Length: 152
Image 1: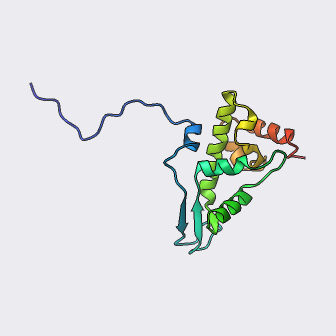
Image 2 (image 1 turned 90 degrees about the vertical axis):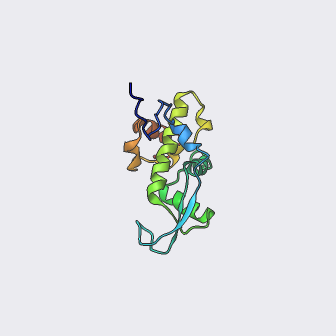
Image 3 (image 1 turned 135 degrees about the horizontal axis):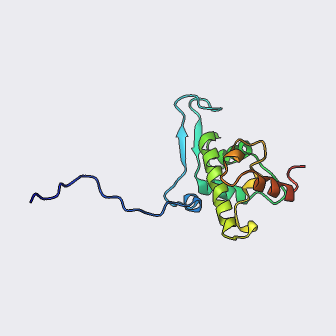
């Protein structure tokens, strides 16, 4: 009887997929400041661009006071200044804002109090392209914005 054939691939065991909250709190993710080699989006070649992390976006959003709103553009500008860059990446900022939003909603579904989650609805409005991508839909965001007097 021949011995079983060995493969170089490790066998994958089924594991728990990361939750949105896990993605926000991932301690292995670190911000990067990158010098752009060519023009990218609204940024010229040679500029220093911050690639933030979901945790940085989460922290920023938590500092927006109740009843006040911000924008993705303002957040990008503020974070670039805080981290010594000229710009913040628009692509990853949008992705990380979605991760933070989904994580906050995931926590709300687990009955975490609203004042204990990142108030992403202060950055996402009904005109945002991101609102249509959220797994839980637009109604929650619109409801929270209305409660805080943000969509008058």
